Image (cartoon, rainbow, N blue to C red; front, side, top):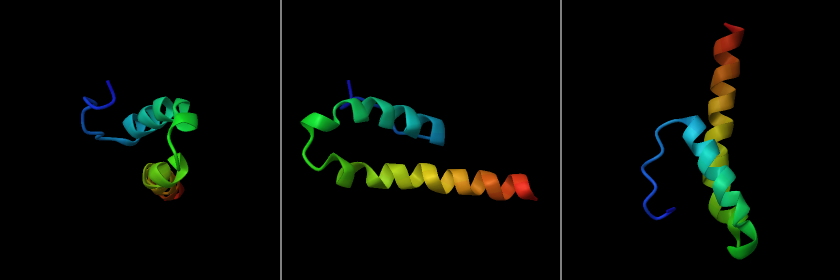
Amino acid sequence: VIKEWLRLTNVNEVRRFLGLATYYRYFVKDFAKIAVALHNLTKEADEELQTDASE
């Protein structure tokens, strides 16, 4: 299923994928190192939302 996952197009999809992938973190060596790029994408989106809300 994960191999056939479509390209992630927005932050909600990234978060959903991370939620699923995090379930398997015990089985994937160095999962945190692999997933850090996706986590960073969600942080950047949160920062953009906060900036937009403050304007």
